[in-house]
Length: 393
Image (cartoon, rainbow, N blue to C red; front, top):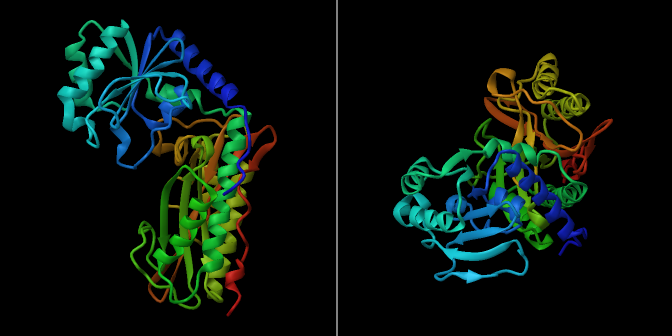
């Protein structure tokens, strides 16, 4: 297992909690009602991401002290002081096990409303609560004001503390080692599933908290990222995008291209050009830069080189989610053309493709960075210009 970096857990918890409670005071909120696993992690450092379907399995009610009570599906009675690793959690309460919250509206709203009433809530900030659940809460608690604060909670965590950056870098390096395992192990005759199994085994062996995504594309064109059993042939280029939550729940999201044998010259040229476009984005992404300008710089470079542009946003923030604000995209495709600020952490992920004999070969690269005073600092290892697997066997 990887030797993850040591950090002052209590100090990081306290720093994040102060941001949250300061925000609550500034908005006159006496409680937060949190359901997002990442927002709960940020506010009270309780780890709840156990399955991708569990996006609405949990509730945290956080008060102005930075502590709170939680609702989870794995208890059937109230438990006081349930977890020494999550000291901000005063009590755990049951929710219906292994079920979407919207399938249990009456129980869910009754349990949560009862707790809010007992706690004396009057003005509650919430995020990511289904409209049906929210309506049921408001009907049960007409005297309580519920205020949507999801975007504000994302914004307050955009600038990372040094310990967060260190944990993001550790996750990124583990993820890069997994990518190298996939690239080095790929052989003609293997499937896209086989390639991903090499990467996923590496991540699990490193001791990551959670695997977030494993995508692989062999000769299938843009947008078709999912593994389907496609078989590698000599001379193939293949693209994969993998991610994880590492120690402390901090994410890494990267993409790489691997080669089996010697790829066609047009693929090699396009790959090198894509890496150049990536570097253009790195140079553009400095404190004060508008995200739409970074996106435009990457795609304009690809366009000038005669290659297709990235057909979606070329980047995003990264933290306790693999993808969080800001989104680096076209100015007319975002509600906010945000400005990069020192301390933000982002991913850049340009894509292009070439067509050979009617078959689209997808090429993509993605790396993670922290924004520093003089520009980006890479948290991932640099993608290989031509991986060792491109040497003809």
